[in-house]
Length: 189
Image 1 (cartoon, rainbow, N blue to C red):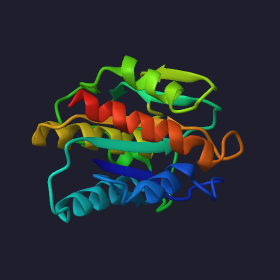
Image 2: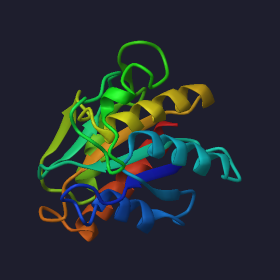
Image 3: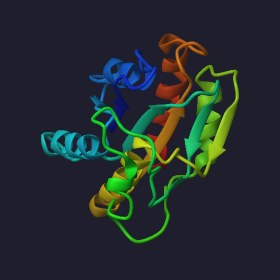
Image 4: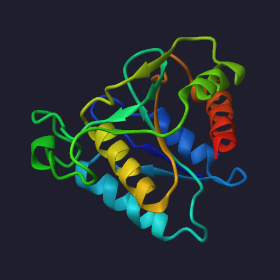
C-alpha cells in the first residue's frame, strides 16, 4: 500500500493527513509519505517515491484535510482545478487544468465504498462519514487524479480520503479508523 498525506498549507500548520501518513509508514505493507501542497510538486514527489519502492504497491491511498468534522470518501477526480487559489509555491490551478493526465473528463475509483465506509465506523469513528463527488479542485483534486491515472497504468486501485482537521479530531482518534479502512481496502484486492 502506498499512502500519502500532505504537509502544511495556508492556515493549516499541522496537517493531520501528513501526520497520519508518517505515523502509518512502516506498518506492515505500508509506505507512507508526506507530499508538498503544490500542484506540480505533489505529482513529481509522488512519482519519485513510487519509483523508489522495492515492490510495486497493491493499492494507492491518498489523504488530505478538509475543513469539516467528517471523513469524506472521494469517489471522483475531476479534470479542472480552481484557477484563483494558489498553492504553497504560488502556482494556481489555472496553470495545470486540462493537463492533469488520463482520459478527458471525470475519473472514478474502482473501489466499493460501502465496506470502506463501514470500516471507518468499525475502526472507532463515531462522527459523520460523507461520500463526495468533489475533491475540492485544489491540490487534493490534483493528486487524486494523478493517483487514479497512475493506478490505471499499474492495474491497481486508488482512493482519496479527506480527514477532519486536528481541531475536530486529533491524529490518535483518526488512526484507528484509517487503519481499519486500509484493511478493508486490502480485502477488496
